[in-house]
Amino acid sequence: QVHLAESGGGLVRPGGSLTLSCTVSGSIFSMVSLGWYRQAPGNQRELVATINNGGATNYADSVKGRFTISRADTKEAVYLQMNSLNPEDTAVYYCYAAAYTTPRTWDNYWGQGTQVTVAS
Picture 1 (tube, rainbow, N blue to C red):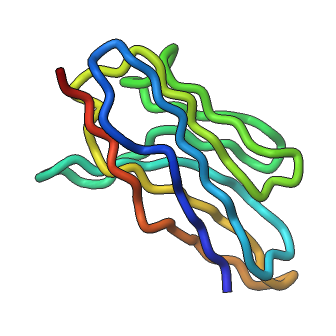
Picture 2 (picture 1 turned 45 degrees about the vertical axis):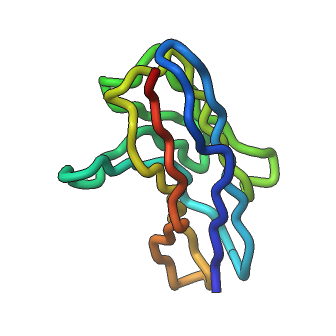
């Protein structure tokens, strides 16, 4: 069983910053990648940023230069530093992990989501 728990969401004014955190717990044999997705009302869930086992990062075009993804050295926590936030960033943000729980079994895991609202 793998459990992801997000924290750090909230209300912020346009131009402000927030940092999201996600801790990963459970029986993990090997982590493949960690990341953040978001879903705004009426929209599909979309990728925000990912970081793979080698440390390579990938960002949605809409957040490049404003958001930074990082992880703990233990690879059991992932963070999203969000700067220059605008109302279009308002969404529920979900933590994501792709991990092996045995040498042959891997799956995708999701957190419960944390609300980020950008408004004046």
